[in-house]
Image 1 (cartoon, rainbow, N blue to C red):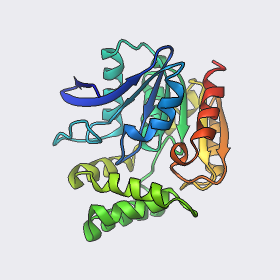
Image 2: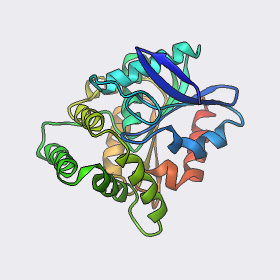
Image 3: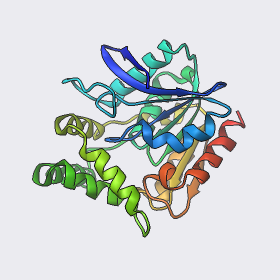
Length: 260
């Protein structure tokens, strides 16, 4: 797969197909390979690009700071290097946060955005948020990345019959350098673009599993606060909706972006 140096970091990415560009952004601790069902489907009629964020997958993992704005700046630099003026952006989890950052800072670069199991902020000023962060940090320090990876994967794919997906994602998360993963994880808490939410005009699809970490009701509140957004719920799905429900995900994305 091609690699390009942007913002002094080597970024690996997938670039397949021709047509309107679709840009797929993955979640924390995983990589672009998780979008394979979407890339195989959409590359038949679109140009599909999926980078590994810095510190993830086959991209370089510099000994520097990590944050949503930094990842967003890398995405803009990648688009510039590939001569892409604007794209349909699809982001899962942390990738959805990056998409929100792009919509807030560089709306002219987005034709639409699809936010999958994510939101416009991750507070650090509530007991629930602090408990979530402390629990994850404690699990990593006490159990190590391997056991932590399995616990995260199990929470991503609740229900029966997900053992193969759990094994796959547990291995992915466990492969992360601990220091890099911790920097990314800590940077998410306290991030947000809530103050800009009502001014975002990018056509937005909020796609959520009914078993995602945060309830559907919260996603509806986000959609209601935006100017041009809609919500679709994928049933019997947890945090990894595009992976466990690829057909439903692809159909929802296709119907949405083809309406713009």
